[in-house]
Image (tube, rainbow, N blue to C red):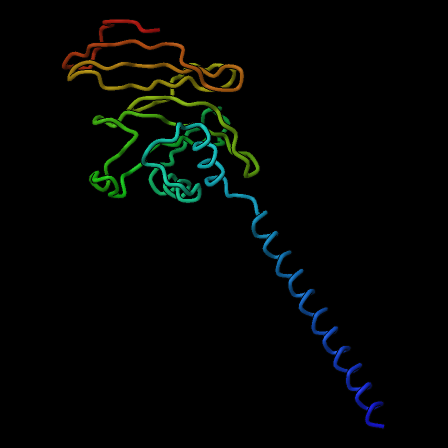
Length: 203
């Protein structure tokens, strides 16, 4: 009688343990599925653009070891501008690249690693359609503006860069075969009225 009761008790314990294990396994599967869904969630357009910009930049000493920190830095430091490059009313994204010092390496916090004293540096251009960004090219200068002329349906872009107190390099970019390319680079001298005279043609 005792042996039979013990045997029944043992079977009951094993049955309960199996139920508990199955419940734990099911919980684990649900949790993992949730994690996969979160990790597989598509980036926002700005985050996707920041990742693409990183892939096109040369790593430098001020980069963090973590890609997520670098992405976060770009999202926080860059200036996100817009321009209707195609004239269709849909604005493309123009990202003015900034990368500010966080105080490491004895460098003053807030120092901009990627733009010169006159604020010159790269701008990255993207079209965003259905939340998916497409790289349109890169321009360089301190300021940029759209020109009245167009190439392959996209506005030509002029970007200028400071050279001396009365001189500037003016670059013109035109859209060709899927992205903007530098087509003209000229050094001009400006008078007091803003009129310019060509000094040297680089391209």
